[in-house]
Image (cartoon, rainbow, N blue to C red; front, side):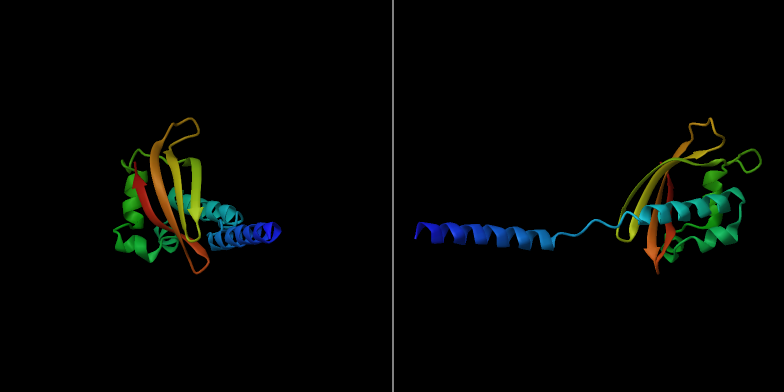
Amino acid sequence: MKYDVKYIVIGLVFLMSLVLSCGREKNPPRDEIPVIKDALGHFEIAVRAKNMAAMDSLMSPEAKKLGYSPQSILLMVYPDSTESTFYSFGSRSFAYVKDKAAVDCFILTDSTDNGRPIAITLVKSQNKWLIKRFDLK
């Protein structure tokens, strides 16, 4: 009888751990990181060229509802349009889940600049990562 209770307890513990591990949400695949970096790279190229059409195509419909536009983003990147320069979005750190990503980085004017901190939020829509928010910190 002692052995029967022991096996029942072991079986119940195994079933409980199986149920708990199956219910957890799995981490998103790591292969999304290069795709997010690529989307941000295309956005960086569009910002550097001040190409509003390209910027607009990389922005989500939610961004427009929140009041973001290529013009408003260019005003943040180039606060003084006659003298400002843009080099890149530097010191990027990424965090993401299934369909949302957050990128903390800096607006750099040259390779030696410390930059101005920004937070960029991206959303995945129809297998494409798009800019949702672009906020100076």
